[in-house]
Every structure is written in C-alpha cells, then in structure tokens.
Length: 192
Image (cartoon, rainbow, N blue to C red):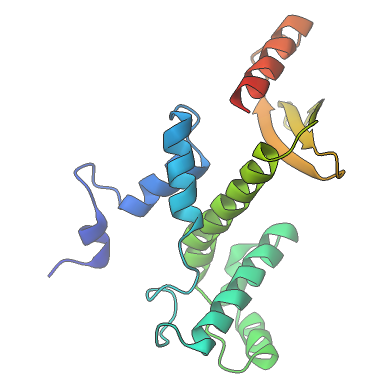
C-alpha cells in the first residue's frame, strides 16, 4: 500500500506540495504567471485540512482549530520562537489550558506546510494590495550584517503609509555602484 507521501510524488520523486510551495514562495526563475498561479494555489489551501486535525470536516471545532493554528503560526514567526517549542510539554499544557481540546500541530507541520501556506497567503495579499494601489514609493536600504553579507532591502510604501517588504537581496558579490542599484530598482519596477 502506498503512503500518502508516495501518492503525492511525481516522476521527480518530490511530493507535489513541495514543488507548489517552492514555485509560490522561493523560485526566482519561474515566469510571473506560474508564480502567481501557485501563489494562489498554496495560499488557498486550508489550515483545517483533514491531514492537519482529527476532527470532522466542516465542524465548528475544526474551524476554531484552524483559526488558532493560524494565529499560532503568526506568534512563532513574529516573535522568533523556535518551532520545536510546539512539542515542549509545558507549552502543550499552556495551549490546552488556553483552549481545552486544542490539537497543536507538530513542529514539522508548523515549520513546513503551515509556514509555507501562511507565507503564500500573505504574499498573495500584498501583491493584490500593490496591484490595486497608485502612487507607490519604493525605498531601499543597504547594510552589512554580522556575517559580512551585504544586504539590501526593498520596501514598497503605499499612500496609506503601509509598508511592505518587497525583497531582500545579498549583493556581496556585486559592486554597489549607482548603475548597478539603478538596474536593480528598474527590474523591481518592471515586475510591478
């Protein structure tokens, strides 16, 4: 009998969801239409899927589970909490006291599929906001991190004073000339 992972695999041997996540969140070489398609696919995936919780589908409890889990993903990411904490017995006890009957995800599920889904959902939301906005401002800043990596961030500002991190680039191997940075800025503007 095939395991679920083997059923999902394509000829290349990787589960299909890994490829979808890569095309939605990480691949820089994919055409924009393909990227947008998979961004939509991954961001639309349900946090309350059958393989996430052992609850009846479409139940109120499952929706509550999914809502709590999405908030939990935000907490772990925004607070820089290691994903392994989710399996700490004291943290599990804390979650159960906060919401009796809550089934917390494993660290693997939290750091893989749930993180990828939330990343895609947020990226999709930001792309829509940027697409529907006018008079955007592109700001950039560069610095060298403690590992001597030359990092540049590109932030898009909306007229409503919202700020969205658009890109982070490592320019360690590039000369930081005006021509080089102008080319990078032009590439970002052309993409939008």
